[in-house]
Amino acid sequence: MQHHNFSKVTEILLLGFQDLKGLNVSFFLLLLLIYCVTICGNLLIIVVVSSSRSLHSPMYFFLTQLSFSDILLTTTIVPNMLHTVLYEGSSISLIGCFAQFYFFSAAEALECLLLTVMSYDRYQAICNPLHYASVMDLTCCLRAIVLCWLVIFFTVLMIFLTVRQLDFCGPNVIDHFFCDLEPLLELSCSDTFIMKLETLFLVIFLAICPVTVIIVSYVYIIFTILKIPSVTGRQKTFSTCSAHLTVVSLFYGSLITIYVFPRKQNAKTILSLFYTVVTPLLNPIIYSLSNSDIKRALKKLLKNIFACELNKTL
Image: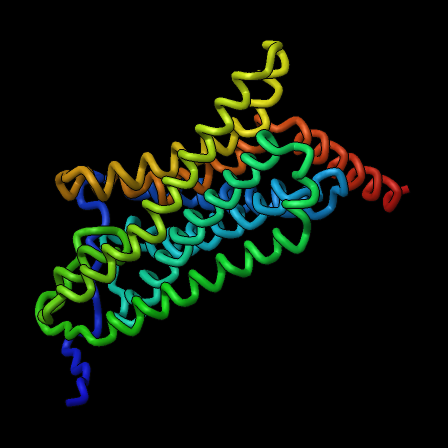
């Protein structure tokens, strides 16, 4: 028998942050500032890497993709959250809620895959330096990115085909600032067993497997670094992957804290801010502050821009 989705709920109410105690405007301005800095910081990384020939290497190519992923994530979540904060709650259509969840899932899954690819790149650069150029060539990099996007596309498509079969005919209030999977499933009056089983499979495939690859890569990297005789050599080699390791720790640390350890809803809401708002802000800062190549390229870009503007005025 063909299944039809007769959804009685057409609008979802997001409660957001209910305990701001009159600080809505201040919190709104803070989030707006963070959002602007996040977008500008990640766009700056993309522009600097694209305009500097010295940064045309696999590591920085993957970094631009990570910046794009951060822009997608923060743009999916923050604009509607700003409205929620300012008006102490907001309504969003059921279709809009699904769309936000799809784009959020895509951005998070893409970040997992990109961090894995970047860890493999660091493994090849440190553990197999003589073969690095031949292994991590342009064709390999492009194939890796295309594969990541194909995986994301089919993942979101699979989620879409499953979620559209659910009926939403009961309550329509989500005690959160965005449409995450768990609160969405709680609103459904359908059997969500298949969806939960599918989610478990995707978590294993897109989170557990990638983090396993990252851990194994860094085990080999650490052993290789420890074999370097000089302290200076060890420090210099480790510095090439320290920024990536920091970003991985922040990203997976926040996800594990949210989804593995049970917490009260208020705590989950606050902690969710970390990987949806704070992490996309910190990623470009971490890479730009800890990477001398990016700092040099940024100074050169600003110098060229200043020189062009000066020539126009003269």
